[in-house]
Length: 481
Image (cartoon, rainbow, N blue to C red; front, side, top):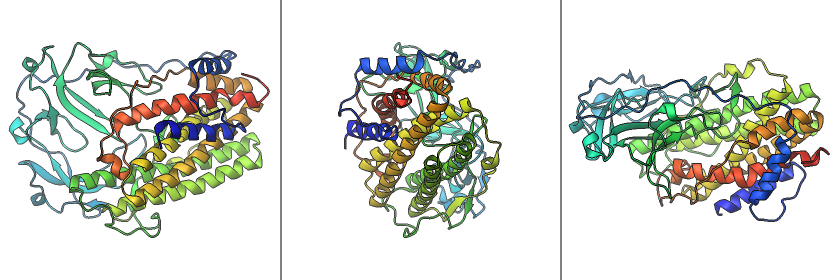
């Protein structure tokens, strides 16, 4: 299916959640979107939330000449209990002069780990000669792996740049990363982090970007990782730490059935991705559980409560699928450990509940549904593709449930919901003119996202499916748009 077809299918599901049929099969025109925006926001009696404050931050570090870095690698030796073990001693790490076998924690998102530790080779550097051609040694380029690292480079100093400035760009949002040494240009959108305002509700940073249809340049970029329904407590998303256990694995999946052609490094990347995905799906169970209690507190109808309970069951299966896929790529039997944030105090404030419902359900789960469907089309591993299709179908239902719940809340608290929806619709969506080229092989073959394409299709989904659905919430309440 094309991106447009995925968007229209999702749009139909979201409007179905509001009891409406999708009108035709075309994208909304700019005028239609303007009308929806005006209807949702013009009656709001409250001003939007104040913008996120931005602290003064240092800009990208400059590259002025050959590196001479401390070769020491800060690491934790492997314990033998890691969820994935790709080396057993430093002697196994032979790809570079400086390497150790280390126990690594996957990326954090707020309150906890995404998945289990891994035991794998970590390589550092001391001088540029320690790096392969096209890479340079950057001191302090800690990507949660080493204190100094070899980074892709197109300049070695300002003398190589028309602008006279060669800088280090490091972007990492826990789902994807891009690290390089490259020139500043006349087309740059920013010169330092201080030039970058928040994007939506995320702090942004000045990094080097390559986008289809645009000249490569330094531009502001925020996290692009979060989709789905997170467990958010006091503004922080929480996931469980990992544990070696087999009761969170979907049945009929055996270890080492993943593609054998992957290098150890690529295999570790895929394992880490699916373990993070499993932890996020596990956290969604708690998020739905908390929402079910909020529905009960507000006097919700039984069908909404029952559908929310069914969604909890779906998320249990999603978590099991993700942990099982990680195992097929060589990880040990792994599942989540305790999740203390699941029992944190639950808000009963209607505005807070509506805001979370829009952000996490109406938007987050809709994006998760689209992502899973798109990745399923691109995935070349049958088991992974089947799992992604299952997730896509379930997440579409979950997103539709969020719209049903929002419409019910709007019938009781129209002004509050109108304000929340209007604030979300007021955030601009600026998709690139063209979709970036999708490589024939790479991360998407194994169900992993491509950062450049994700930014493009996310904007398309927001514009074609999510914004029209949000703009239609009040048509079912007698309030009118």
